[in-house]
Structures are given as C-alpha cells and as structure tokens.
Image 1 (cartoon, rainbow, N blue to C red):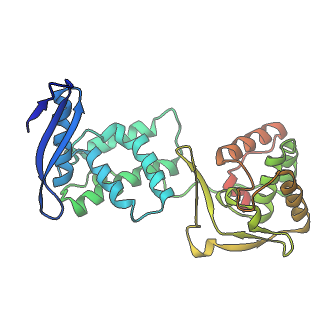
Image 2 (image 1 turned 180 degrees about the horizontal axis):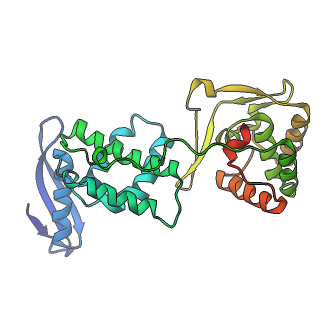
Length: 301
C-alpha cells in the first residue's frame, strides 16, 4: 500500500488497483492529502469498502448501508436514519471493526444512552436500538458477519409509548385561550383538535388541499423538517390518504387565516411552522392556563 509525495505541491497521493463489482481490475488515484498517513488511510478504507470484509469498520459499513438503502427507502426515512446513526451510533462504534463489536460493547453503549442527561424517551431509545440491530443484521446478510452482538446484549427502551392522555372539551378550550394571541398557533391547534389529523399532515397542508365549498380537507402528504430541510412526502399507507370533513365554524376560521396570507400560492404550505414550534406552543399554552400538558399526537384522540 504505497503512498507518494508530489514534489510540486508538497501533498501526498495514493495510487492503487482494485477489482470493481463486475470483476474488472481498475486503477484508483487520489490526491491532496496533507500526510502520508492520510493517503494510506484513504486507500485502506476504499479497498475495505470494495471488498466488504466483515473486518471493515462500522463507519464503512454505514456508508455502504446508506448507499444501498437510498434506492429503496423514502428520502425522509433515509434522513431520519442518518440522523440517528450520526448522532447516537457512529460516535461510539464508528472506528471499530464490525467483527470486533461484542455484546458488552452494545451494553455499554445502551447504558450511555439510557443515562444521558438528554433524558431520551423509552420509545426513542427503542428506535435507536432498532437501527443498530438493523445494520448488524444487514452485515450478517450481505457481508458474512458471523456474530450478532445485539441479540446477545438484548434491547433497550420499549416499543409502545405510555398510555395516552387526553383533554376534555373544557380543558381544550381553556388551553386555546392561552395561545389565542398568536393566530398561527390558534388555527393550527383548532385544526388538530377538530379534525384529528396528525401534526405532519397538518404542517403539509396547502390552500389547494382545503375545499371550503364541500367542507373537506384532502390529506395527501406529510411534512418533516430534517437537517434544516423541509421534506414533504406521501403518507405512509394508502389508508392515511383520506378526506376529512370540517365544521362550518372551522371553515370560516380557515378562510380568515388564508386571507391573511398575502399572495399565498395554492401549493405553498399554509401553516409556516414546524413540529418544534407546535411543541413550544403546547408548553406555552399549558403554563399560561394551568391545563395539563399532553402529547400533540394525543390531541387527535
């Protein structure tokens, strides 16, 4: 695995041969490394990914996994996966060869997350754990990994959230008074409460989705904000695509709100907010009115 120094630039480069996926022998050049060590590390990582040996690092496995899954999963799903891996998994396992990951390593990683000052919910811990299990199973299936440290270590968290809570009508109307000073907050919670739609569906709505003549809202997409980007995708299932009837007073409130959106494009998001905004407004309204806080998801029940 030689590396060479370019006397003109003072930078290092590597030049080597590898076999591509079709069995062809190819030459690879890569320039611009500050040190010989960096050039050799690049060559080693590149060849490792090409050979896909079970002694590749977790980081290299992750890159192969994401590249493969990108053609099979929705963009929002890929972005969610990437966030979980890059935030919670790669910092711990990234440099470790996958065939050296032991059940004890997984347990230490789990304990670190369960004791995190961030106070992750049990359902989120379960989601994170599932992603580690998913990529290890991928390595077993496609790259001849013989061990399953996740199965030996056991899981963490829980699959289902705690029993849902709900507001009575009086509690909701009291809460509503606490956020009425912000028209965007008020109309968002009105729509959530009276239609039972999900918050991602609410945030994806456009004026074109609302038919005030037939008094219906067409649910045909959902919204997420991931890595600073607005992502709108179709609903997860066919059943999620539906038309929801809306009462007369909500029709009028929606019409009034639409009228306040100057030069609104019919296909532009009607409610320029995020899930974080809704969570913040939930907190603000509950503190202001003394109404118990519930999950935004539970408003629809």
